[in-house]
Image (cartoon, rainbow, N blue to C red):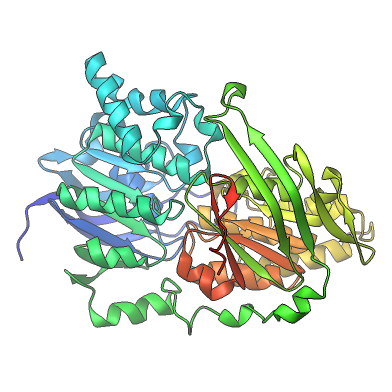
Length: 496
């Protein structure tokens, strides 16, 4: 079927500049792509396949701000993209980054949405109308004057989508954007794009069932080239290729054996690994937070050998509960009990920090050192459990690099992909061997295969685990129980 092409890429070649001793191979060679007007195109590919790089090439950010060698023809209508500055593309091509922390830069949500509109010299009243409409679209009206840094990871993605909604560019580029937002919001975004016949290009490391309902054109990205996988619906071989690359979740590929059975009878007679009683914690909007929020958890436990999933819409309190359990936030009332010397005792905040490990939604909130080696060694050295000669530390670091498929030990995390930084973040906690591990949206931005490997490896060194995810299928395959939160409370009768 013939469509009007609104964006065309022909014979694209790109490779990053050399860094230190790292060999830079071409990321794209002979790459071609055409985006048809009014259609939703999906490009599936594993982490490190070049999806983020391509999104930033199309918006003029690469190689302008990164360096690298680029050739080929990139056009939008009659415009040559490589001759335009990024700000000249504001109304033409809009991009939501995979890592929202790299894109948000103001201190108010309404200002974040208004910034692009002000750059276009739009009248003040029209800006106000668009900002309010964009906030309402994905349920962010209560955060209008709030600071984006206080939003949850999914809410930050919603804010960036609201920025795109307000700008209304001709082409929407979504780089792993839907991973951290709740299913209702995913549906709203795709429905809006489809109903308004927007031209959209979605990049994803995993298959989501909503793609089958809304996507028009399917591609697989592999070894720097794009492979057509069907129009209207994917070709039969598409599913096999997704499964081979770890991008499709099935019962056979999920490693559901990770979920060892925990009999209810043994739970009743055993001491919880961690238990919450009468917990209360609150944020106040007047203290710099986006809105008033109260976490109220009368009772919550995780038993030895369990994987418990926390589910709920963005802003329901999942990450807040996780931060209380690991000692980053101190509860205002109630107690948290942990197992100490085989007995259950109330834990001080400082004790939780060494008992519970918390993998943030964004790995960059925890990765801060200059090389992979330094990052992995830091916690081991501070624990003081290993011999000072360093031989045991080196042995463990090399093993972690191998297990988590990390690059050379002397490379800086700053130049690694988002997915690789997530694997590094997980490797740090693998080495720390905390009793309870909490993985917050660990499946975002990486393939199912990578995520399942992370859960398996972390499960081998921890006594229990909490996973936070918006993928209900994944939660049901891995977790013994799913606990649903809404407005800071556990929903009664919703436990699965």
